[in-house]
Image (cartoon, rainbow, N blue to C red; front, side, top):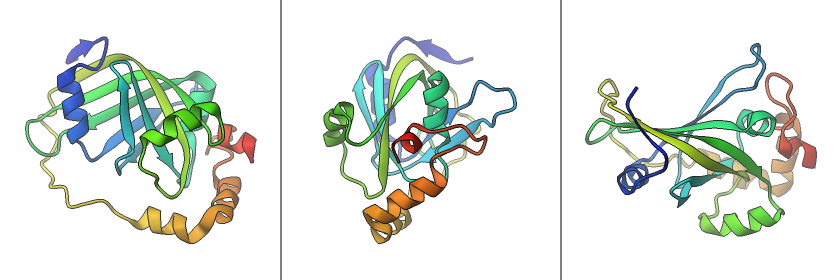
Amino acid sequence: MGKQFESILPQHEDFIRQQHLFFVGSAPLSAEGHINLSPKGHDALRILSPNRVAYLDMTGSGNETSAHIDENGRITVMFCAFEGLPNILRLYGTGSVVLPGSPEWEALYPLFDPLPGARQIIDVAVHKVQTSCGYAVPFMTYAGERDTLKRWAVQKGEDGLKAYWQEKNKRTIDGMPTPLGRTL
């Protein structure tokens, strides 16, 4: 089961800051709904307090996490060490979706380096932190960030991104509406 904590401790914060990749898990309440697990890269996560993190969510081919959070709030953020000592760290929490133009966006967005294609911020109230060994996680060497998504978003432009969101990000693969979709 690993060790459990009520908040992000300084050693957890240090570990999180060293990671180049994190994963986000969410699920609908429906037993027939699909569980979503998404990898996230770039310098897109900020630790706001011992019980709060947020990440800048980039445009993707789906928008599952947003709809799941809107429905039930549940979210897990996972980090694992591919370099150095083995470790896995999970943040269990309740998320909220922060959309451009909202007062929350205006407060949070300046904390991030601007990334083309940013569509929303996922704000997570962390209620449990769990660490585990990570002994089976392989060593992998970090070679750098891919710039494909950034180039794609710049090429699309603002109007092209909005059209893409309209086509691909209004509903989940299970047909659930997304908060972004309600604004389009």
